[in-house]
Image (cartoon, rainbow, N blue to C red; front, side):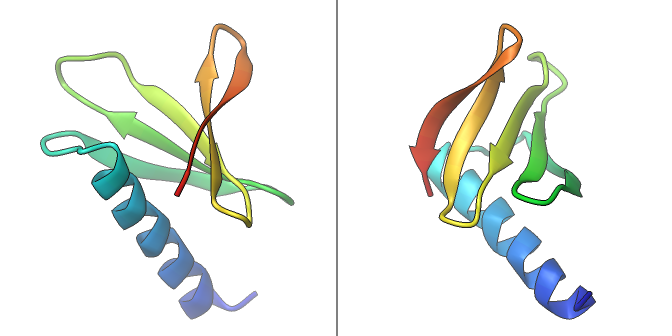
Length: 74
């Protein structure tokens, strides 16, 4: 496991999410990495948390009503 490389990937994904979803006051939290996806949560004091997973091609899926729905390619 290359921690430096993984940290760069996480920070890169967080910045892309912030830019693509026009996030300002919300926080993006890294939740973990599975074998295929990295998992993130957008956290806000005023709105419910929104969960995302991103694959190696930067395809991003949002968790809605019990399933993962394609959202955007970062």
